[in-house]
Image 1 (cartoon, one colour):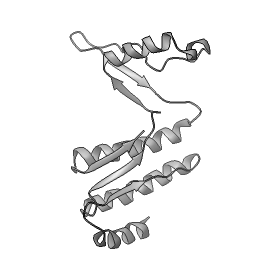
Image 2 (cartoon, rainbow, N blue to C red):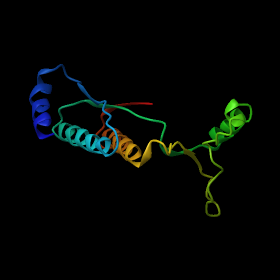
Image 3 (tube, rainbow, N blue to C red):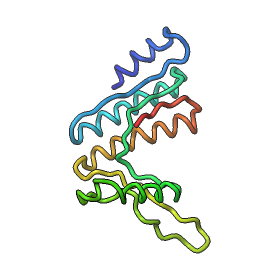
Length: 146
């Protein structure tokens, strides 16, 4: 990892301004977490040195996140007429979570797939948070396609 980061630190200044560093990796099991951490270290070191204008990741819908109520309603309508219901697949748009009085309802998308396991979920979460930091804190362009 340090060798790759050093090579990129030497190479990126020779490229046209605005280079985007992409991490498109996958390994089975815990190796996926390790390679995601290694990519994260490389990206964070390049960002800290101001050597890239953007970062890119291949993301996944296999995460959990909050949704507006309208999305959940649309999912429920779509699921009601879907063949997935006939196959007894569970809908991944869950009912609203309990909230304190006066708080808006919160709906969650549960995209975790048990078959993928916790290593996959953690590896993708590492990518996701690097993308969030790169955009919100560092002001970089981010590509995080699902």
